[in-house]
Image (tube, rainbow, N blue to C red; front, side, top):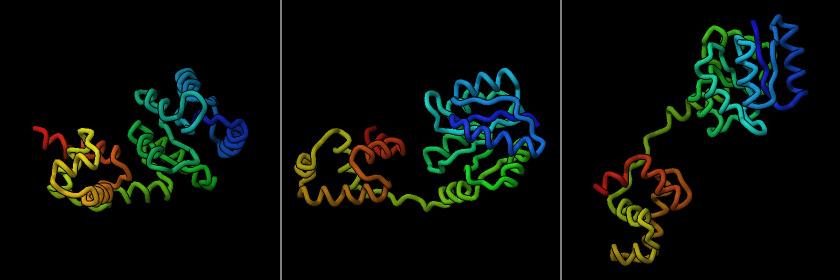
Length: 206
């Protein structure tokens, strides 16, 4: 099986190359950035690419997106398992997502599984994704909370919202705290952004 290793740390690439060569994998190319990865993969046509995500210059995510039409499989191998890393990588076309603390035997099995087109996820990543799927439905905003958020979205201050709705500023703050909790955000800007994303404000503006 022909592999390309993409990681900006030479020591990591050397370690992976030695380990994989001992397991009868053939490393046919290496890269230290997303741009290099695309160029190397295009030149050597590997079966599987081990792709780090965060690298100087062009990152691994951009490389995954650009390699979407290539027949190779991309297996992310990184240190990070946050939502900002995992979900975009999977959506971009990665066949699997592993962390760098994955034991040697599991990594080798994962490479073979990825080559066969099977989805491969480290336990931590699988748990994170499953948790999102099982996440309970978001509690709906009340009519008054939507009234407050609609005015906030238009740039109104708490005082202006209070005057428009004939309530106190303290009540406005309380409504906003409830909105933040229900939308899973921590500030006004994020609340407005999430509300627009979910269509909560657009539907009220028609």
